[in-house]
Length: 325
Image (cartoon, rainbow, N blue to C red):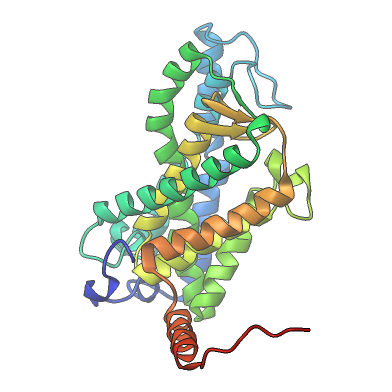
């Protein structure tokens, strides 16, 4: 059963339809993407560099390797790498407000206000699915998990992750499931194609992560599966609150609870999987994405109807003895 009844939601203009409100000429969307890109990927270097200078000047770190983007301290690196993400918020704000003349809320939800409970629903559903999937893997492969936590590091990481990770993940949601999804919807006019386009973009822009290249033939699958189900949920629910909650829960789970050797997200989680399994990870990601959808929305109507027909056919079928060869 779904967590809430979607049929009871307000029938306001759909989330994608909001992309056709305000100043919505196609040239404005092309300009908006340029404004966003300049802010989020060029001007974002300013807070990033300021963060590096700050940690070096205060003596928090003595060196910073630009090749590896590391000071040698995982917690310091975590803070520095998160310094640029607020510029994604600024980029979306500038594009939506100045280029399109729309309220910032319109890139988050079609509801009259942000639905905070939906964010909680998305986070709870994803956390539940991730916990069940991880518990099953621990039971099946107990020898692959190690308790590797350093208590002092983890206690320092906890408030940093709880503060910075939602900023980071929401920045990405504002970009991909917010502005770019509405942009694709405006240009392509097909919801499924808009979702697929932003999913491919999300996957490509995460190609620098170590997990992506552990096994290139399947390393992209988790990014694709997660992005696709988050985009579909955004369209289905007329807002990206579910995706905001799910993305934050996903990253917090990896930072704080369970990580994997060689993972980009490895900062100091309580439990570590010591061996990578890209194929198993790809299959698990698809299963998690499907489970997330089912928890929130239930089975698709056509599958429920198929199940009822199969059940009725089974009840009508006369009992027969097993076939003997």
